[in-house]
Image (cartoon, rainbow, N blue to C red; front, side):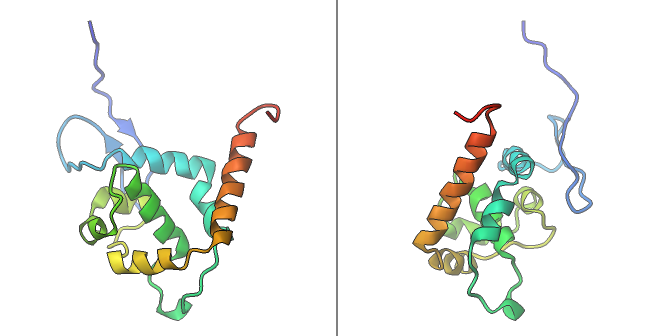
Length: 144
């Protein structure tokens, strides 16, 4: 026999928002799993480490979204299956994704994300692989 729990699953507070998963109703989203991804990302520091290594040729005075926010938005949306950039014109207003990314306002539009991705260079891929390799090695008590 299965014994369910009625206790909500609580996540870290984000920008003053209380975030929890429960089966009691309330504000509902199909993208709730993004909070699990976000918790692990923050625990590992994955997107923070990657964003530090990526170049940014944008005119900073005109930017409303940081590299880190753009990277988190794109990666966190990929996890629940939103691989197309055109999904982001609607997703940018999704409270779960905003909270996971660490914002409480609209996220970047599809065109902003497209411009960000267009900046990608081979050196970005090398940097991302380096971070992933370091995290993999760090996950062992002794280097494999």
